[in-house]
Length: 122
Image (cartoon, rainbow, N blue to C red):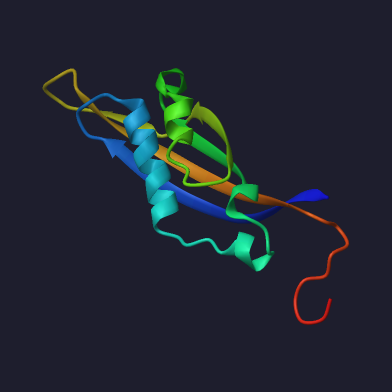
């Protein structure tokens, strides 16, 4: 058995004035997930919870993201959350407030046999 990469989903989320990196990260993850319907588990006749999901978040302040809160958004599968420096903070001209932009990449894997034949005749 070997992990096979089956899907990549991308999203962007913001927190306009709250300064909350976790909120922006969750919005980016939701944007990636809620715009897609994955049927890969069903196609390979495995349960949805068999999916191994790597969530990569990019924000300007990775240390301020609650990884558990981000992982909790995932509807099924086993999540790993990686937070890296990325995204963007955009300041306002006349105040200390700023807008946070977070990016999310969601990579979905299944543990599948190397020698299994999928398709018409197995």
